Amino acid sequence: MNQDIINEIQNQDYSKITETIEKFLAEKIEKTNAKGVILGLSGGVDSAVIAYICKRNLKEKTLALIMPDTEITPKSETEDALKMISLTGIDYKLIDINPIVKEYSMYLEPNLKEKTLALIMPDTEITPKSETDDALKMISLTGIDYKLIDINPIVKEYSMYLEPNAKSKGNLRARIRTNILYYYANAKNYLVLGSSDKSENMIGYFTKHGDGASDITPIISLYKLQVREIAKYLQVPINVISKKSSPHLWKDHEAENEIGVSYEEIDSILYCLFEKKLSVEETEKITLIEKSKIQKIQELNSKSEHKRLLAQKPGVN
Image 1 (cartoon, rainbow, N blue to C red):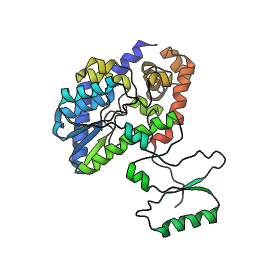
Image 2: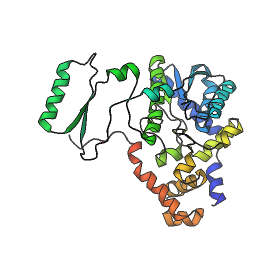
Image 3: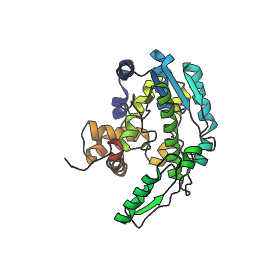
Image 4: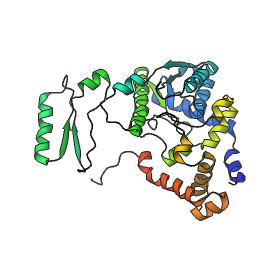
C-alpha cells in the first residue's frame, strides 16, 4: 500500500473543516426553525466526532440517543458511548432496543416465484373497512399476489413476526434506531444528524432507511481516515478512534471483516478512482493494492447507487 496516498488523504486542515461543519449545522437549524439536533451515539468514531462537534456550540441544543441491543452490542460499546456523554456534557437517553427487536414482528414470507407482491396493511382500529374492501377488489382485478396484514397489533406492540434471517434482522435493528430518533426529532422539533462518512456512503455500507436516513449528514464529505484524524483534533479518546469500526448489527460484527478490505485500502481506492479519476489499472499501480480489491470496491460503489438516490420514478409527464 502506498503511504503517500494515505498521507495525501489525511493531511487536511481539520480546524477549518470543523468550523465549516459547525457553520453548516447552525445555518440548517436556523433555516428550518428547528430547536436543536439529535444523533445516535454508538461508541464508534463517526458518531463520537459528531458529538464532539455539537458540544462546541450546540451543547444545549443536542440530544444523543444510545441504543444498544443488549443481546449483541458489546458492553464496552455502550460504556464508550456513555463516556462520550460524560466528556461532552450533552443530554442523552439510553434505550435498550432488544425488546423491540424481539417483538418487532410482521407476517412475512419470501415470495420467490412472483415478481410482484402487494401488501394490504390496514390498522383495523382506524382504517375504514371500505378501504380494505377496495384494496382487495384491486387484487381480484389485477390477479397479483398479496398478503393482508392487520398492523394494529404491530402499532400496539411494535412487533413483527419475522422468519429467521440474521442480516435482515441486523438491518431491522438499524431501522428501529432510526424510528426512535425520528420519534424524538418529531416530538422536540430537532434535526436528525446522520453519522455516515464518505467511505461508507460511497460503498453503500449503511442500512437504507436505517442509519442511512437523516436530515443532515455533517461528516459525509470525510473519508474514514479523515474522520479518525478530525477525531484526534477534537480530542476524542484514543480507544474510540483506534477501535475496529462496526455497526453492531449482529454479534462480533466488524466492518472490515465483512467488507474484506481495510479502510486504508478502501479510502486509497476511492480517492484514486473518484477524485484522481484513475482507472482500475492505474489505481493498482499507484496504490500497490491488489486488483481484485479495487474491482470489489468499484463494484460495491456501483451496486449501491440506489441507496444514495431518492426513490426513482418513471418518465411520465
